[in-house]
Length: 96
Image (cartoon, rainbow, N blue to C red):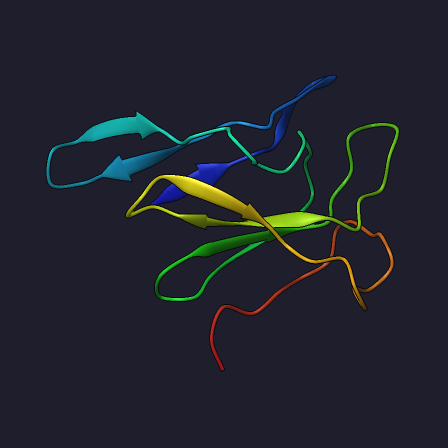
């Protein structure tokens, strides 16, 4: 399981972790090139990466995101060319 982002009251997080049920342990995800802190974003799994997009940080609605690869613990920003307008509380599907 991968957890990323969210908020606690007025604090928005741009961090996360990977949970391994076999060892019952957590490992922090890299923050290099990660999307900025936000909540109410969408995160979907592609069978190899978690894609995070959009959300809100209390001041800004985002039209940005990132792709997280847990095998190499790295983030790649998503393109904004042709992206939908900024929003939050939206839904994404992880499989067809």
